[in-house]
Structures are given as C-alpha cells and as structure tokens.
Image 1: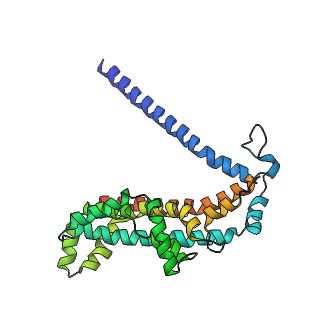
Image 2: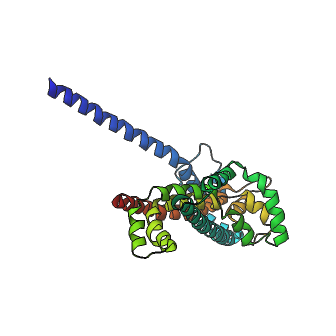
Image 3: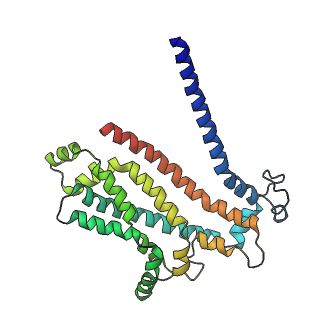
Length: 283
C-alpha cells in the first residue's frame, strides 16, 4: 500500500513537471512569434508583405532588403551613433552606480541614509519633466546635436545606484578585513576585492542600461537635428513614409538593430552565470 502511494505521488510529480515544461515551451513559442515574423518580413519582396493570408515561411527569400537599407539610408551612421551612445552611457552608468553603491553600501558616514533616500526619490520624477531644463542647459553649453548631449544626461541613474548598493551590502566582510590587514587602501578594496564579486549585478545592469539607451527614441529626437548624430530608433522612424511604408525594408532595419542587443545579452548572460558561481563560492 505504501509503495502504491509512493508511485502515485511520483507520477503526480512527473506529470506536474511535464505540464510545467509544456507551458514554458508554449510561452517561449508565443514570445518568439513576433521575432520570427520580423525576420520573415525582412526576407520578402514588397508585394509579399501584404499577402492574405500572411505567410510565415518565405518561398523565395531575398537579402536585397538589407542591401537597400544600407545603400539607400545612412543606416551605418545610425548604427555607429547608437553603438557609441549606448556603450558610453552603459559604461558610465555602471561606473557611477558602482562608486555610489559602494559608498552607500560599505562606508559609514553621517547622513548616509538621508542622502540615499534623496537619491531614490529622483526615481519618482518622470523623465519628461526634466527634459526641457536639460535641453536649455545643453543649448547654453553648446552640446546640442552632439555625442555629449546624447550621453551625459543619461550617465547617472538612481536604479543603478540602488542595485549596486544592494549587491555591496550582501558581500561578506572577511575579504575586506583580510585585504585591510595586508595594507590595501579603500580604492584597492573597492576595485580588486568587492567589485569582482558583483559581476552578476553588473551583468544585469549592463543588459538593462544598454537596452534602455539603445531603444531610447524621445531624447535623441529632442537633442539631434541632423542624420549625422541620429540613432537607430530615429533612423527607423525616418524609413516610414507619410502615405506608404515599405515594411520589408523597415523590418530589415529592425533586424540589424536587434543583433547588437542579442550580442550584449549573450555576453552579459555568461558573466551573470560566472558572477553567481563566484558569489556562491565566496559565501
């Protein structure tokens, strides 16, 4: 009787796992459908994009759309601008967040909690509220239609500071104490002892900040006034006509814009796993 109950419970557990994996697979397929449709449309000619019923599988795929996007539009310039803005914004966001997070998480000074609450309170201010003052300031500085105007206003973020503070607070004190006994100063402890243990958080912030900067449309639209400094979201918007749009060309441009994000995600995902392994080994 006991063996029968055990087999029954074991069967229920196996059935539960099968149902869970089936739901996950179905959810993954549903999430992949827009990307598959985007890729399919980018390989169609202009007449095949509006065929009814829609065709997921392209009978005669072509790559001329990608060539047309690069030759007929300054897509390489848009891509270069997006890479420069996203990379510098992400690097400085993480660097500033790590420095401030280390100060709030590992250092003890008067007014630390109040100052941290002030920093967090900035997350409640909509970005649209500060755009006009930032625009006026950049105008007087002469940074409109420049990389400085695109990057500098976005290199500080309360979310990055908050996440790095939480990561530093959860680190053990043993390594810091051992480094201090060996004569390490505060900068050495930050750079060589604590920061390498926060790889998981840094990888997460890299993905979030890079995607946010890469997909940012409103701020580049306000700051730039020429194609020489326009980013990919602006370039893709320029490809849509007033009365008609070649969606096969637009989707080809979108495919080009998605590739760098996928690369960053794959690299950061590996670092995320390594950071998790290192953190568990230290603890």
